[in-house]
Structure formats: structure tokens, C-alpha cells
Length: 130
Image (cartoon, rainbow, N blue to C red):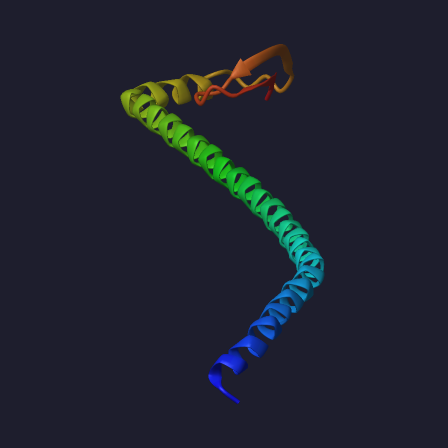
């Protein structure tokens, strides 16, 4: 058999094989597309779950961050108030406190209630029973 004869037989067979290949591929394509869509929907579900989890973690992080800032702010306010009180009590001389204590001790002890509220040298109020 010559090459021309082989070519004349081979060309129609080759065209028929190509046509069969195209037909097989076109039958296979819907299944491939369906598999791709199935995979895509699964991936989108996973992405939605991961996104929801990330949002939950972010909200929790923001809550704890704000709580920390609030506690720090309250601590700083208490420190500031303590400094003001220390300054105030350091300005009050000890002689005023001593004099107030002496006048409180100099009251006559009657042994009965006087019916009025008294203040001790530290500013606390109590009923005047002695």
C-alpha cells in the first residue's frame, strides 16, 4: 500500500475520530459544569461560615477592647481623685486637726443626749450622745 492510498483511507477516519471526540466532549461538558457549580456552592457556603465566624470574633475583640479602655479610664479618674485628696489633706495643717480634737474633748460630759448632730474633727456626723 502506498502512502497516497494510506492517506486517502486515513483522512476520513481521522475526521470521523475528531467528530467522535467532539461529541464525547459535548456529552461530558454538562457533567463537568454541574460538578464545578457544586464545588462553587460548597466553597461559597464555607466562605459565608468563615465570614460569620470572623465577624463574631471581631465583635468580641471590640467588646473586650472597649471594656479595657473603660476600666483604664476609670482607673485614671480614681488616681486623679486620689491625687486631689492627697493635695487637699496635705494642705490642711495638723494644728487644725489637733485644735478640733481638743475642742471636741473639752465639751462637758453630761451623760445625756443633747438632741443635735455633732461633727467630729474628720467631718463625720453623729448624734450628740456622749
